[in-house]
Image 1 (cartoon, rainbow, N blue to C red):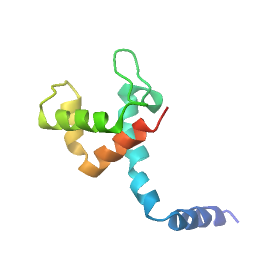
Image 2: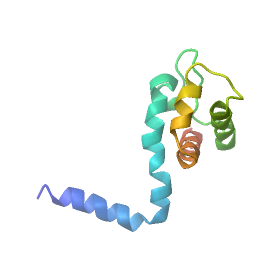
Image 3: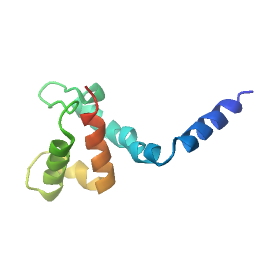
Length: 98
């Protein structure tokens, strides 16, 4: 009986279709952000909040960290480890949190 739950979860994911695959990476990729940016990216001390900010703004900031146009102590080391798709998913994830 305990084997049915994972099978049911897999079936639900399969039935969810392609949109679930696009949304899937965001929570996993976003986990790296909450260590500094606080739970759900709501900010922590001097570290700015990400939750509820515009997705295009967040993606532009991430790209600026990646290119070195926006200097930072940590972000310029972290962002290059993510693909463009992961960065877009992270930006969309935090933009969707209100």
